[in-house]
Length: 302
Image (tube, rainbow, N blue to C red; front, side, top):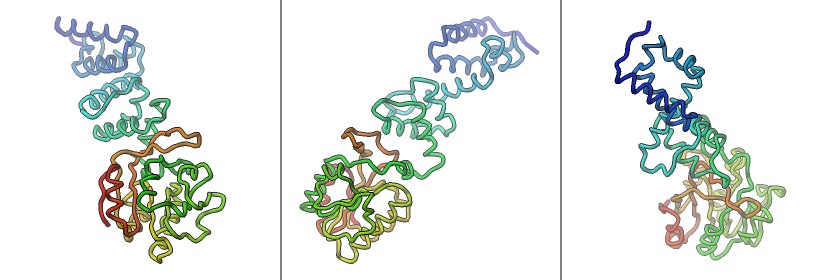
């Protein structure tokens, strides 16, 4: 059953409908207009339900109207966060965020911005971030790609502390062009099959079935005295068994103040991982490590 609305309400309804009518200028304006019409029941004089109004007035399905309204809610939530630098430009970019709680929406959008590929943010990338937050440990985001190379500034810092690099056990010909280790082991050689010694740099493969084996081998060789020093770059997955194992023998840890933009095989920065990184030091030059790596983040002692 319909009921009369006031002249002021009718005037406001016309204004809101004009927003929708203007070729649906932006999904945010349209979503906000629909929200106000629904919440104030401005449709009630001519239609029994909001769903009937959307269908007959705009040929909107209920689901499509909900998408627009939820997207508008997401934008309103992001606008309230002072750290968000810019907002989604399309409804499709906001759609994955609607499945999250407000605080998680802000976290996910920040991550999507920080880890976006050079070509820009896409709805697919936002969905990947949301999937990561909802379903998977952050470290697994890297599990399909073991050919991300470390930016030179971290390598140079490690060389400065250790006085050089004797071995990189998880490398390639391309990677060693930057690392310049005296010797290196490739995926084809399988670094786990060899003995490790001397001064070691390691950015291990992030695949879940490998990272634990590489970090365990490094710690074991360090505890036995075969590895004199080591600098290790990993995700700061502090809850994992392998990270906790490294903390048993580590001498200092630098928690980086920004996510590392690894380098692809062509030398260009990739999108950064979803999780932040930590650089762990094993050896006796703790003060030198702290002095050198404090430029990248907070250094804590083991």
